[in-house]
Amino acid sequence: MSDNSTVMGAGSPLSGEVLPPVKTKGRIGEFVSKFCRQRMSLTAAGFIVLLLLIAVFGPFLTPYNPDEANYEVLMAGPSADHWAGTDEYGRDILSRLIDGTRLTLAVSLSAVFIAAVLGTILGLLSGFYGGWLDRLIMRGSDVLFSFPDLLLAIGIVAILGPGLSNVVIAVAVFGTPSFARIIRSVTLSAKETLFVEAARSMGAKNGRIIWRHIFPETVPSIIVNVSMKVGGAILAAASLSFLGMGAKTTEPDWGAMLSMGRDYLSIAPHIVYFPGIAIFLTVLAFNLVGDGLRDALDPKMKN
Amino acid sequence: MGRYALQRLLGVIPLLFVVSVLVFMFLHLIPGDPARLIAGQDATLEEIMGIRQQLGLDLPLWKQYVHYMSNLLSGDLGNSIQSGLAVTDMLMSRVMPTLWLTFLSMAWALLIGLLIGVVSAVYRNRWPDYVGTLAAISGMSVPGFWLGLVLIQIFSVELGWFPTGGVDTWKSYILPSITLGMGIMSMLARYSRSSMLETLREDYIRTGRAKGMREYVVIGRHALRNSLIQVVTVAGLQFGFLLGGSVMVETVFSIPGLGRLLVDSILFRDYTVIQALLLIFATQFILINLIVDLLYGVLNPKIRYSS
Image (cartoon, each protein chain N blue to C red):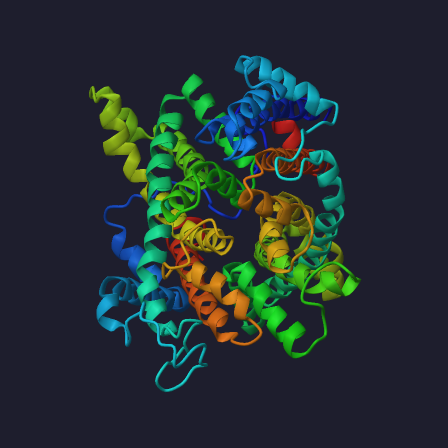
């Protein structure tokens, strides 16, 4: 226990569990049937598919032009014409929510994707080669873990300046160490398996062993951790936008919409309610899917 | 135990060092000349040179770091760029609201989280479990700042029960701590559920039931007490979350605490204050984790012998 002498690292102990390697091939069917047995997660997955469709086809679905101001219906509550009411410029909130789905999902998914790629590479290298490289990478992630998530993101945005692309970088940076740690420990156990030893005895090079034999073993953990992290990423991005460090107020980002609506809370609370509900349901769906995936992919939870 | 504690203590020192270097570098990582940033846009060249000399920005980096650290250790965090006040004094006046807020949030989150977790575990796969699990996942998914705004709208604006912000009375802390504690409560509920489920499978629980102990004694005295260790540990580790969350909650409820100060100083580009706050938050977080780790070692002998 030279490297992991801490009981639980500084990060959140629930955010991602280390899964034992699962053979991916031939088990996909089993996984699908297990996942489908969990009705809540399945419903949530359906909701996410719907959101993705909305993100892709958004411009065709909006009942109004999301950027068009209409000064005759300023801050009108929900009605037959405007299901989610209008905002302080008379813009249709439902249309802006639909339009903003793309931006909100793009920001959080790309941040988590970057974190997953970086973290996986670092984790594979760290676990496979060990030695000083391992120590360097793990100490580096210790340092990142010593800043609370959101504060680290705020610090990074303070350096880089506000804007959505910097939010992506900030969220990706605080997501990377958790991937690195999880993938490292999967790599450590996969390294000791017989098939890796067989590959090595047949003269396979390190790069090939990592890519062809160890990486596939880490895929279930990557998938689970991605789905668990997306919710947090959406919340973090929305928080930064709310603080005025993310999306510009003109962009139809859910967090930014909420932030704008704050000034009119007492006269037109619906401007705040609807973007918040959109964020809440989306994060909830990702968390439920993450739970379902973990249960389906983790043999410990088989019962 | 002594060796374990020493190992953990020594492990923290390099971490603190690297964090202090990073925080020190913060001023230099911002694009642009720090002296110019501090002097402001309209400053003359002489003013900028003056500031550079005054802050020692013309020295080599390592000397600047030594200078920074020796000031730091004597409690001098520099002066605010915005107001010129000593940063240490600014922080001191802001500490109490944040401490109260985090303390109250943690207290209710721990109580309710444990309650939900225990009930879920005892009624596993029955409706109280489903309700508890759904409540926990929902609490984890709700954006804190939004929850705060909704609570303000309902309980302050509509019903008028609580003030909309500030820290004038004890009532001012109720809505903010509900908001801040929600995420942790959910996490603790889920954690205590799984920890209770594990404990309930132990032999001594079966023994207790076999010898005819009442169920509430089995649950309360034996199962709960044993899973409590882990839950409290997790609660300790979640303080970092509260620190991050306090930034949002203090902004929503206009609480003059450290989190609000961070947001304000970022908006005003008050870099010395940002630097000090990042250092304080990170140090606090590292030390809390250290304490939790050590406590866990005291409570759970398995850990200290394996290291």
